[in-house]
Length: 321
Image (cartoon, rainbow, N blue to C red; front, side, top):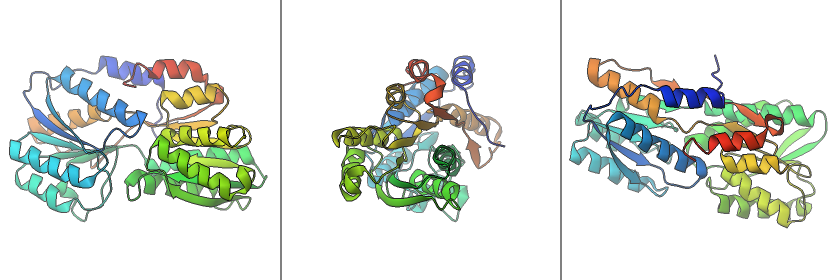
């Protein structure tokens, strides 16, 4: 069953969550992808807040979107003898050796936001993520519903090449538009989850597609790339949200501002609170040896211009953004 969130539910859960790890004295290393987007910054903020609330000594390492930096950080955490490691992996592959080192040191690893590809899933305790294929499908279903039978050429701004969100969100979107011959995915390129790169790639799409006049919609794997695309569309003399529809994923405040201005059409929410469920799982494992399920699914929801974007934007500003 798909789990869908509301802002009120998320806020209430955050406020009422009991500090199950308070005074535990645990030390947890957190290898974060970087700070490439507003959502990523919010995830970092929420993780720090959750750790403080629960009495956890959080060792933070910003990988600046480089896997080699994450591998160094994990090895450093192992050398320090931390009690657990949180890993938001920049890409899906290439983790087996370093995670084997953590396993040999009896340090449980919890994946946040993104998954990895491995033949040995005992290398990590659990993965706290959304259903990223579902996110892409929700975005695609929305576009299908809006377009109807009209011809629609779509350009896609992919996330970081090789990352699990980029792979999954592309797959879900393509599943949604499959069988709708009037909708075609004409161009697809990585924008690396950043606003700057999203703008740059969208500019190239516009030049290649008759000054943007042949583009019906842009699908971005995150909101920051969508915001960059909106800037490119405006600079090309077109109206984002009407001349070119804008659909993305994350639900950060900036995209709600764009929706309020009529410059974006829809976004799929990705909650930044991955740490809460992760710390709960670690507490149970450390206390009773109880292993959590391999996948702890977080909440997601579609927002459109009909959802009072200004009110949603204000509510989200108190959620780590």
